[in-house]
Image (cartoon, rainbow, N blue to C red; front, side, top):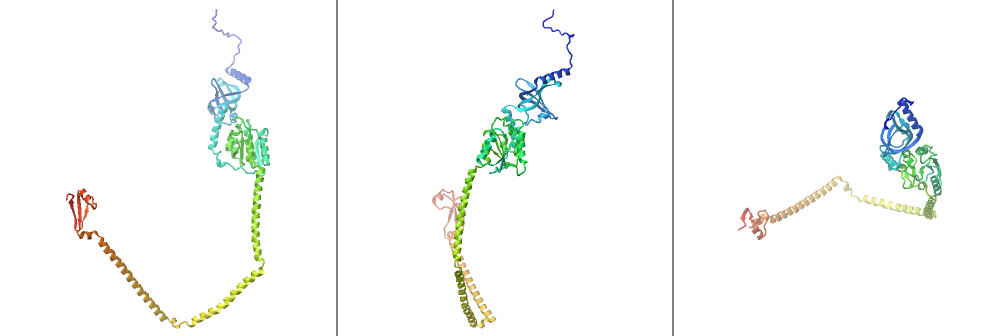
Length: 450
């Protein structure tokens, strides 16, 4: 009798015999044909990028781990950096790897999972582009005040394009050129980039003066195409100024940071792009009235000037006759004065002494003048020196009288303390240890007890 725990294998049964490779291939066939495409959410772990460009990592959650392989062509389509611990959603087919007897997922698409993963990617990308200077204010272009043509990059369906067209038409109707694009989804970033580059590549006569890139509000996943690096770089390289109007007022994308102007809403972007025609008409009317008023003032002033000239030219004959008469009067005065002047000069020559023309007498006269001036100079010099000598003598006498040695010669003395300070009171004598007495022929020291 056999024990219940004993298993009997009948080796003579008709079980098929397989090689390891055959079993591995059957398992791979079963996995690939029974699961098809699946989406799996998990954290990236053990990421490795081979030199061939293929990526290998594991997807894990709290209870399990699954191997994942992302071939080079699929990895190239991932537009964010894969990092350890990043939560993602991968799409692919379940398969098996016979070399290690394990099942795995062959990844064809990788997406960030959850707002946390998106924010992490966004912050890393923002830091990278900011370090390159793409968000610097000095690169911002001025928005034209009155563009002739505006290019709009947005979805052709939905309320956004209608709001922009309606708002611009109300404010200032102008030429609008619309480039329809997808504003969310996998193809959106490429289409937006192509639209920005396409507008810039148009001939100058067809190129718009301003671009508006817009879409309505949505989640961070919906707005993600406007955070893609290709879109940001296309906006940075655009020669046409760009207004970004993505989402609502609280939504911010990287396109908002690189754009030349950020509008909180698409409607606000239309207001930034176009002035109010009624306001322009009022301004132009005010300027016209101001110019007309100033022109009227200038015309009146010039009319007054011309009127003055007309008064002057009203009687030209009288004006010329007055000046001719003045000229004749001056001629008469000149004719009358000239004979008198000639007569005066003749009289001066007539009575001029001929003797004054003799050189010896002139030299003698000048010699006498020189001698007189020399004597006068000598006399003044002597008087001036005598005055200085007198002042010196008086100052010397005064200095001698003020010399204290002269006072000492008359029997006076000067007292000094042991510190060399002059003593002038009996109290100072009593307080001194000894006293130096200066007389006319020297000094003696006396004790204070005398």
